[in-house]
Image 1 (cartoon, rainbow, N blue to C red):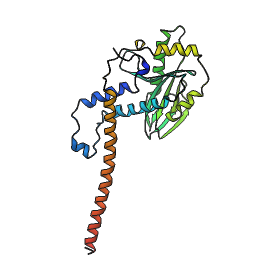
Image 2 (cartoon, rainbow, N blue to C red):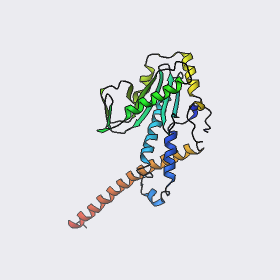
Image 3 (cartoon, helix red, strand yellow):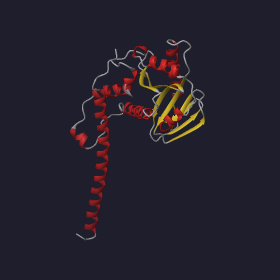
Image 4 (cartoon, rainbow, N blue to C red):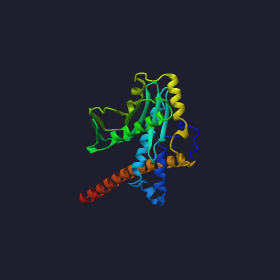
Length: 261
């Protein structure tokens, strides 16, 4: 059983980080020589989990600037399988589920139920609607009458977003505009309704039981994140050093050919 006393204390990207660390721990540690030359510490299997976690953390950071009337939950385990909802919001504008998509520099095209990332079709719209429906059923099972749950797909660092036709039940938005959009929405819930919903959803017993998280998970992810950044810096330095060596060698050869030396 999870040890989180409230769902609000559950950190962003908890599920993704646990999966990433499990994959990373299952293979030999990177050698000192590999670190020296800036080889990437993550393999192709681990990288999507890392990118996803970074995206959820970025959105969580943005949501941290919402007014105090809002309750924000992260990495919420819902349903019977291992899936979760990246973020759940309760506030004056209503209840929202957020599906975070981190597609740095990619072209996003949305047309009704179609959602394409640099020309590749996805099932993102279906997934977002399913998450909202799951949360709606959970709320209805505890509070008479339930409440409307709105679904969102929030994009982190996209190259461009083109929405030809807006999806009927899903809002697609750049993370940079998320908070401003939320606070400008019309009021849908009163203070008492917000309090009841926040109290319900903040209770860990309402959600699917999850394994007890390791105490050092945040520290280990921070260390891995630092290693990824360090590798990128070393690659840049080595690339720059390589250019200097090539230029130096070229000048030496040219000098010899011209009889300067």
